[in-house]
Image 1 (cartoon, rainbow, N blue to C red):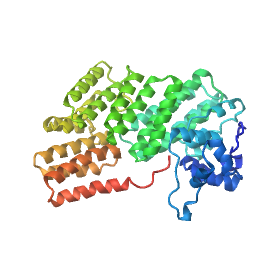
Image 2: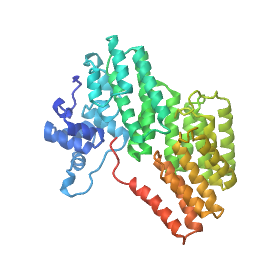
Image 3: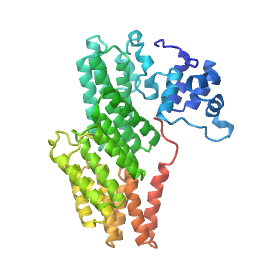
Image 4: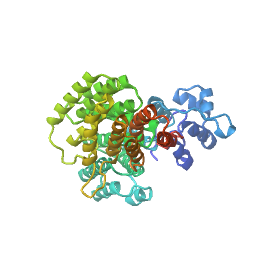
Length: 450
């Protein structure tokens, strides 16, 4: 392990090697890290407090053993404070899902050689990332153009799989990718290679944020989004910054924070005005305006987004999550018109979304879009008196295997409210409400690990 500049609470190597310590770090359970540091490394809470800028009493509360029956201990969730803890305890960034910290980069020249591919395989990195490692070793250098290209291809494959692949699988593969890229950042690189790797890490953090939010990991998703935004700043990469703001707008949308969403959209436009992310930013603004009842702003935003979309070339891989394809525009208009109560237009767009989301063999290639389209058809049916159609569409949507839970529940709530307002005494209405609540209860437990 590389020697680093000492701090009062730098964790000894034997502590950092412990599985329970690494698990606590990966879960961002720093109270447990503090407890284990004192237990196994003889690092006092006073030294930890001095290193991370907390009072000693607060460190003790966070490190309290939850088996003592005093409730859940406080957690550190602010990105800035997490960085202070990681730096104060000299925790390597990759253990906490972060890019290498500045004090790590200062000692890069003394870094040990990365493990061989067999080690990577044993750690669960098989697949996309070990190919890059094999290519790197063929030239016996820290990194080469072939390895960099392989990393980019791996990121591209994951982004193209996002619309349909299992969320747990995507989460695992994206985490493996981040660990591999961070490992390369610890080696010797040129300035150009270092920036390329930073950009790769930025895209992976963006994808990780999306997958984490789909899985209900709100705090972890916010950390990944913040990491991507910081990397975008450091690398001078406007598109990554804009996508980070787009993700923030999506978070705000699903949490009913309309003004925060509008602010995030504007920040995204400032960051980048040339790539397709701008189309999605306009679409988000239209969706926020629709929820605020501003029909004029909806129309203006949709018109601006359509104009930006028409100026862009048709993408070679429209399924890529960070490339807006023209077919997705029906999805945006569907959402806006449903919220404005224009049921005929919303239903027409919803049917188009389902058709486009279905492959020639009947397989759904964009199940998350299709699920929201079915909920839109359900809302339209409820408003026209067809309760059987409304509940049928809603039930099918909730049963989709690939879900973005926050987005799905946002529209499911709309259908649930329509049914309860129009058909409050129907048993089918109560059954559907219970289905929605069951999905919500399934997302309200403790957050999954980072």
